[in-house]
Image (cartoon, rainbow, N blue to C red; front, side, top):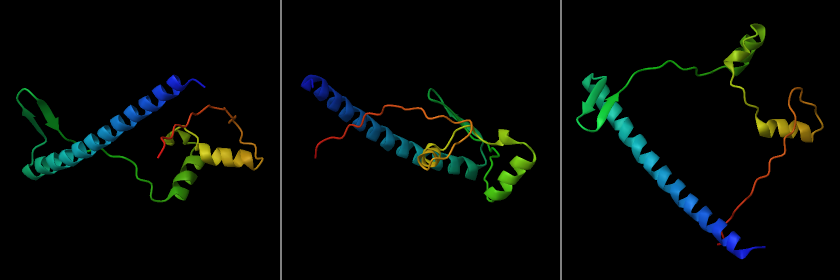
Length: 122
């Protein structure tokens, strides 16, 4: 095995880990500040404001679905042929588990994807 290639892989992995940690820290700080700004705007009764040379901040409400009774929701989907209410993405772990039990899952076929695991030494 090429040691230079492996060394480069681990260096790239470390750089990616460091960047992901920095991004996670920045996201946490951003989310905290965004929450504080939103609360401040709501408290002041303002829905839009701007800072000269920086930009504009505004907020609005949006209605989203929060399913509290999945069984009823699924019955509605089935009874009304309303499968468009679901996102199209299989639960890979669940489908894989059925395949491992020998079940046939109509419409789904296995796709083997290579995954490389890189773990730093401790």
